[in-house]
Amino acid sequence: MIEMIDVYKKYSNGVIAANGFNINIQQGEFIYVVGPSGAGKSTFIKMMYREEKPTSGNVMINGIDISKIKNSRVPYLRRNMGVVFQDFKLLPNLTVFENIAFALEVIEETPNSIKKKVMETLSLVGLKHKARMFPDELSGGEQQRVSIARSIVNTPKLVIADEPTGNLDPETSWEIMKIFEEINLRGTTIIMATHNREIVNTIRHRVVAIENGQVVRDEQRGDYGYEN
Image (tube, rainbow, N blue to C red; front, side):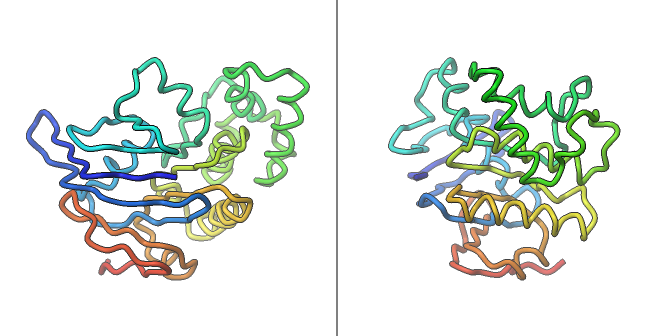
């Protein structure tokens, strides 16, 4: 599903964030991306949804080199993936329902289809009863669940999550992980950058460790592998 071939990324300030990424990711995998701060994890993830372009090399998704597509095609690329951020990125003036519906309105779904899909997705993340609330009326964990719902409402094949439990307490983090596990069981590929050692060591999946812009470890059912 995803392949990076000899991917390099050098920023204008001279920082090399990707120094020869080579990786294959199959449909349906769940992958943790781990490593110290500044190692290149965010660049690795951002290149998958074309927030960043490599300086050289190829980033292939379903056989298409997304590093070569025109900027005007990027929104269409992202229709087939969901992105979850640490800081939620919800629209404050829209209700929970409207925040999630927005992702379907931009692709011109019908109103009936939007209502059905939004309510089904809210049910999955346990927030059906809060559909009419605004983001500032929710806890951090609830806001993250809305963010996840927005990312999966269009049933994407791929969900990319950048530190999705980073701002949450431990109990809420486990609740969020249950949702990701459920999404993955339905066949969606999950790629998650995380510093959460306990989650990685408890819910075992493939672990890709990045240091100094390189993949230094790639293990099925791996552990976190770093000291706190």
